[in-house]
Image 1 (spheres, rainbow, N blue to C red):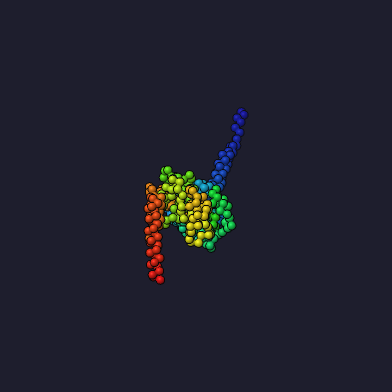
Image 2: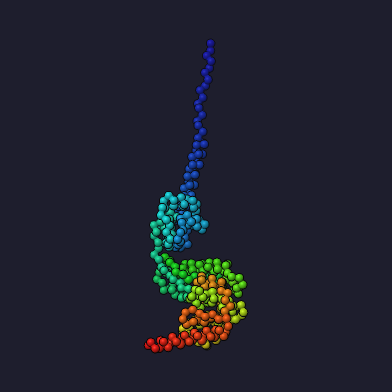
Length: 357
């Protein structure tokens, strides 16, 4: 009897490795992508226009806010990684100050520098309200801590270099006390002052009083510079502005001495004569109608505010008292009487000085 044939033994099929390989490739690809993202976020050098860049941290600023600002400026990518790195490795609070960053730094190194509080060596520059742009230039040129890059440029060329479409620099730089890193360029310093003044003027113009006789913010800046030169007493600024606004409204010449002095330039020796008042220049408001063509000084925010918010006074005249401050008058007769009193005070002072010598 024949034996039934035994079934053939079949080899088990090898396991399909393709899903495993695919999974490994996905994992490897994901890891590579994550590595690239981490590098882009944390290790990529920060973009800088120059070999050195100044970073100013204001009081109360946080790492989170700084990272958000840098991301908005497209200086860092994937800010979530920078925030995570800061929370894990940077434990000190952000210190206000001015920091100098060199080209090649990444966001990790920058945060570490800020955490260490390694501030740049500082240069202090005080721009006094009422000074002229020429005086500001001289101040920068005489400071050994400022790198000169704008020497020899005309006013119009300098403004173009700073990215402004204005043809004259006078008035467009905000007075204040500033701190810069040692070696900062005059261009960067002036750009900061220019941007600050433009911001102040825009804000004040937006909130200006109604019915003012200015056709543009520039005209308000011109008026502010005149107010700045006419009085150093804060409480008087709005009244001085009112006098000039009242005169503009009725077509009366401003007749303000500081504009005459500015127009005289180097000819001014500390005194104004009757001939000077009668000699026409583009700035002599005794001989021209309306405002001069440009500001005559660098006005403060307070002066800009006064020019755009004059008091309700109807005065058309003012003169110094001789003892501090000014007397404001509505009529020429009142003004002449105030001038007579001022001259009497000056005579008394001269007599007292003569007796004491």
